[in-house]
Image (cartoon, rainbow, N blue to C red; front, side, top):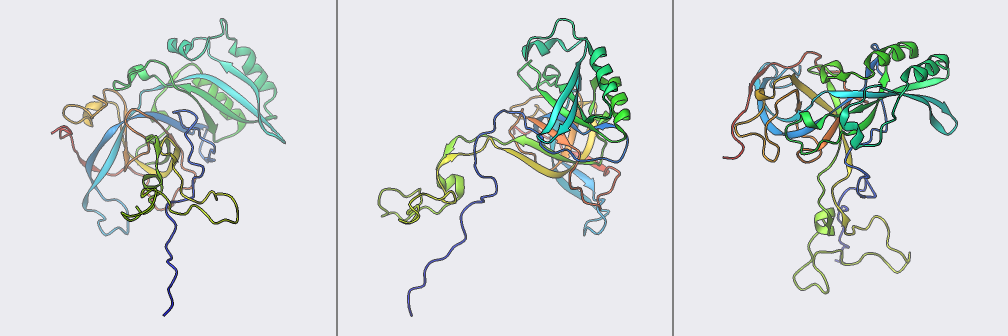
Length: 336
């Protein structure tokens, strides 16, 4: 019998190349879904406090455990209200979206000066008149919202995180009226999402720095007597083509990438963080005091990172609309 050439599946996924660092710690939402109901903001944000576990009655019809009590891991997000700082109107041409105008609130949050120098006398009325006059040209409205990290007890910073959130649903006229009422006010998560709803979670993953191909791609460690290196790829390519292909596992940045996890379920939204904070607080975060979001499963990113929740872009049809019945939330100490 002749020698059979060794064959093995490739190591590591090529789905997210290049594995470069994210440009900033706040995730960028590049796609917004369309919703059928009236005008609404399509996203909210919260800071990751930690994880615990709950017991709930399984409400998924067809599940082997339907009607029985099951245990789930959950992520707790500290979600203080955000402030609607500005409204931006966009038109569209052959190059994409173009800003028509933006209306900044007259009384922006005090901490917004930490982001950039505020205009002395903003005039939102003039900008809103421009929007009303050009309503037929406007493609979409987006609200510029600022988080309030001072209200999230475990976040050691005061500078707000600024982000744009699209307004969708209803007609353009209804969207403008909805946005006009919100401008300058604080928005709570209960004004955007409801319990039992599915959301897409977008965040920047935990950074692991510069790593070799064994950790980064899962390649096999070479035998003990290998020449030059063991924790590397033995042959990175043939003589021809005379270059290293992008598919070859190489060392480089690992972690701190933007990732989106689809169809995470909001199990509970509460106003008192004591209901979910374990004894002694969350490790590396502390106590959750205000509004919180309980999301089923894990979410990308380390503790304290901002996680953006968006209306789902590809929701399944068989998820119950009502929130599940939670029988117990584990508050046992995470520090022994």
